[in-house]
Length: 80
Image (cartoon, rainbow, N blue to C red; front, side):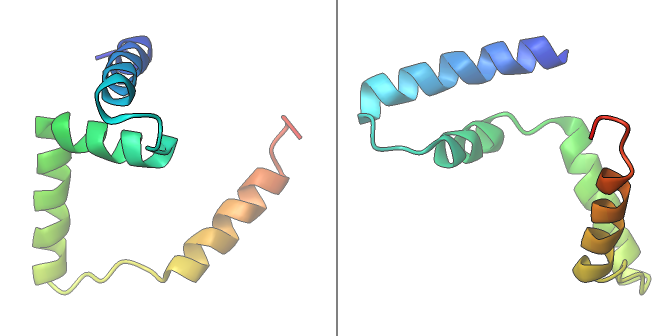
């Protein structure tokens, strides 16, 4: 599915959810509900791979390290 198709799908879902459930849902809540309903085989495969890594002892790296690396990368971005 292309990015545009994902956006269109989310827009249709969010519009219907707001009509049916009222305007009290946040965008984050709408997105979370949409993602649950649109889990892909790719998502499932990624989770299975991560679990296999975990069971082999791979614990990844700390969140703080990831955020530090991401901040550095964004600060160096040519878009800034």
